[in-house]
Image (cartoon, rainbow, N blue to C red):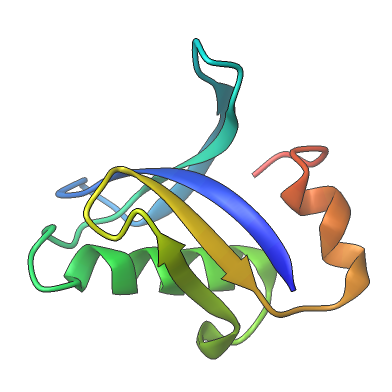
Length: 93
């Protein structure tokens, strides 16, 4: 299992993974935009789908586990060990 922190912008014009950013507290996260609205888990499902596509893993391999009602979310990703570099912010989105 791999972990990834993302910051989500719902109601965006397109679904896409953008850039790695660091907040004032020193937390590094991946910025993700989704077209879905933040109601009834729609944005969370869209985040899982767009991140899975970006990583090249099945949708079922990505799960929002923390921050379901916040912009900052923790994801668990079930994937091969070579995903570690991409998830550590070493690769461009």
